[in-house]
Image 1: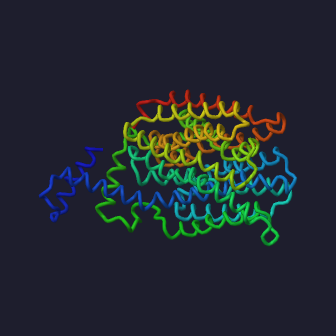
Image 2: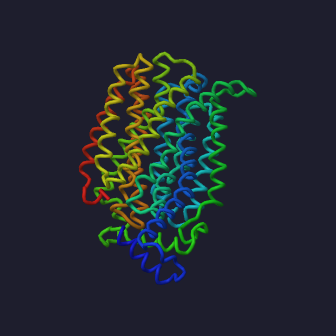
Image 3: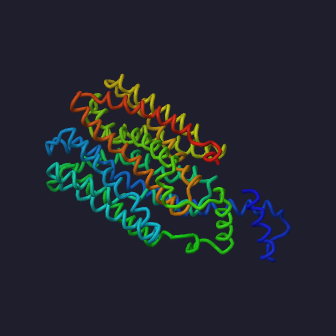
Length: 451
């Protein structure tokens, strides 16, 4: 990076006679570099974070809606778990095609399409009356949202070099814990205070009202988001040149990756399995924590919503700390392993304290902070070994593998709960899976991913 920025400084000196030469070129270059990435961060990341907040809220609000929805519609935990899990089936099937389409038509158009359609489908869930309708809408919601996360991750590779990406992804992915931090209490309030208004139950209002931000943001994406740095009007000529030079300096061994590399590279499969472990922990907590708190003795939906905010507040902090630390030390593997071990401990230990609300909140906070902390580091890995079309397909393919964990964390726990009348078996299995994820992370080649 130092060589890259110094080279740019020399070229800039030659082409810009008006440059202030009273300062040392390297110092001026460093200041310009900081200013560029500060501008990019503020222009892109808060907006994407808000979009991810909206996406995740529409995906997991079914966990709190469940507290009313199952009794109202006479659904079993198995029906709920299957319906919640079918989202991931649609998501998995259409993730790679969606990301390849995004690369063809541009991020602006495709991300806008994704957000508007998932908002509409999420809102329609308020009219569900049968298991079949629930299954179909959840499947279609997954189809609609497929490509959003891998699409944004691919998009960010065009704006931020490897050495900055873990922190940037952490800032973007803050939308996930924030959606539960803010969305938990908000959803609890909607379910409680809108219940019965105009003849609709609280869970119906929940789906209808929380779909609106996604539709609005989807329309805004089309007008706000530049497709590439070349079309970014908020950058001047020198800033575009600097950005291109930094990205051109990325070391990938001079190799151009083919589409097939996305499906045959063992590192892509390992990445997908590592993120599968992330989603096992994430969705086990997101979809089932309200039920666990209710079973521990908390019966108010509003109180449950407030309690779910605690694990997500800790998750926000640890996500930022770990992302920044990983970039600072140029280390990826142990920044995944240590958080995974914390998640395994939290999930397994929580099974021994199912009757204690306070203990559950503490242990699930540890588990949730672990998966959140690992997430931006995991998704900083693909661009270290994939480029071009292979990166588009590889990120999406890894997400597809990972979302098998989303299906398992909803359907399997629901099935086991109906069968054993306890969630302990599912949580222990998922805790063991986190240790398997530690092994996979340590197996990633250090000389490739640690940069």
